[in-house]
Image (tube, rainbow, N blue to C red; front, side):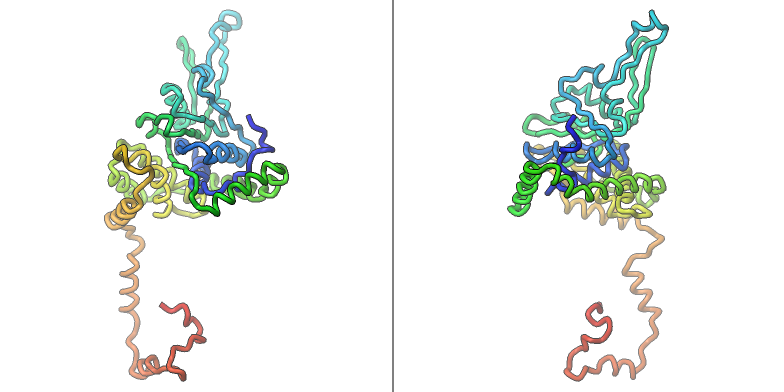
Length: 358
């Protein structure tokens, strides 16, 4: 485990805003089911994940090696102690060790499928259970599951990929200024790591406090019937299999609303959740570009709003028409006054509110 005092600051990461948001939302609501990060080498995947763990108030960051055994991951029960003590001895595994923190799997696409299943089950339920000879032990396993992978080395099976709550595709920016800033910050960190960390300490501390506040706010948020209908409409529009996507978008939308500090879930939260939860679930051809078709998402959002309107708020056009009907007609003197030009023949820009008129 890396020394947290020498980790690159989370706030100083450049060009990976979508990845950072996905990690933050998963921390606010671990039941989202974790994040899988897909991208080529050298795109700050591991750097961002390690830095993120530091925000969770010194929560553990547990690395799961590719060659780990079942007992090492899930835990084991020593039945031999029954003969001497009358009790079975439970030895927790990595899943229990990650409770309250981050479980990080590098090259998760190379991990055996049965171990990936165990990870995802624990991430979804918050509990890991070990059974042997009619004896079972359960441990709390509330952690943020983060897996990174390079698609060039092989893909996760679709059934396993679907079970990750969120997915983010990361690439190196083609923007010259962004790439230059990445080098500038990395070189400054390597030259004087402690000074660089201190420079970003206040930003990291503010993010950590905002995450904790959002976790508290999440308890008071609920999804309305309109929210649920629009989420269901989106998932049906993208022809996703099963109901997992619907639940993930619902949980992510709640987390995003809490992150914004809002008192209710809005379409903005549902859209962000869909952008993170649908790309690895929607049916697509093998040669399609990664990510989500924004035009298709726009159309689906528009359809969802039209078919499932929020009756508590009339459409903006109706409000304007109602206001015009209630406005008393102008007298001939007022019309002449409105039509009269100013001294220079132009509208008087010094009139209060003139620059902001519709």
